[in-house]
Image 1 (cartoon, helix red, strand yellow):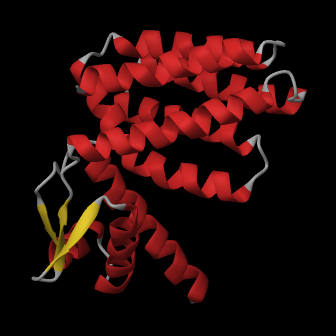
Image 2 (cartoon, one colour; image 1 turned 30 degrees about the vertical axis):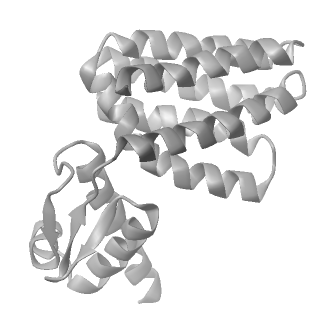
Length: 211
């Protein structure tokens, strides 16, 4: 029974997060527990648990009438997340360049193949999730739980910004995956500063579009 309850909470969380990240529920939208319960076909208990988790991530804000409001992503918040992500990823790639094994690169390559498939279908939502996974895999290479946890939190918030970037310029998909391949090859090389420069350029594009 407990396993089923956990599964329901996870299902509710993923479904609501997907609705927010996809833009189906833009910033300012009120989501009532009743509406979500009916939409997802489950009781309010897993819904409340999912909403609590989404609030901790900063994607929603609890509202007084048994529900939440989808958070607007302010320019200040975008810049804060951008600066933190830049610091984390440049530190990671500097440490990892020339140090990773075949299994690490096999994982990146498999992810990049799926990215190409998503681009072929013009599936922005799928690509955004694969983009998230690609960068998370790099951070995971540090084998540092604290870094991984911080990266997970900021990436969840950054998903909205990344999706907006691709919505505004669908041609960016091709440029994004090309930069991912460049970063992947640089990580396999012996020049950490090259990998850092490529990572900085990749992340800075988001800032350029949003500003």
